Amino acid sequence: MKTVKDILGQKGRVVHTIDSSATVLDAIRMLADKGIGALVVLKDDRPIGLFSERDYTCKVILTGKRSENTPVADIMTPDLVVVGPDTAVDECMALMTERRIRHLPVMDEGKLAGLVSIGDIVKDIISEQQVVIEQLERYVYYS
Image (cartoon, rainbow, N blue to C red; front, side, top):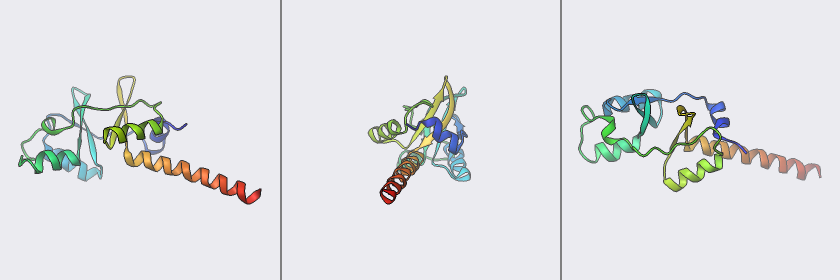
C-alpha cells in the first residue's frame, strides 16, 4: 500500500508558504512565480489555513475586494484538513473527494512536512494501475 511518504519521496517535500498578514496580491504573485495552485498560510510558523486560486476567484474577484490591501488571512480557507506521512494514497483520494478539496498539507510530529495535491494522488494511482495492467499483460502473454 502506497502512502503519502512515498509520494513526497518522488515529488519532494518543498512546501510553499505565506504569512497570514501578507496581501492577496503577494500570494497571487507567488502562485504565478512558482507555477502552483495553493499556499499553506502560516501564523507564527504554524499552518492555519490554505490559500488557493479558488479562494482568490471566489472571495476577492467576485466580492469586489482589492488584492493590494486584503490580507491573506481574510480570504484563506481556515479549516485545514491534514494527513500524516503514513496515510494511504487511497485514503487521501477518499478524503479529497468527500471534502471537495484539492490540497492536503502533510504534518509529521507537529511540523509541516509536505503538501500533496489531487494531481499528485491521481498521478500515483494511474501509475499503480499501469503496473498492474503490464503485469496482467505479461501473465496472459506468457501463459
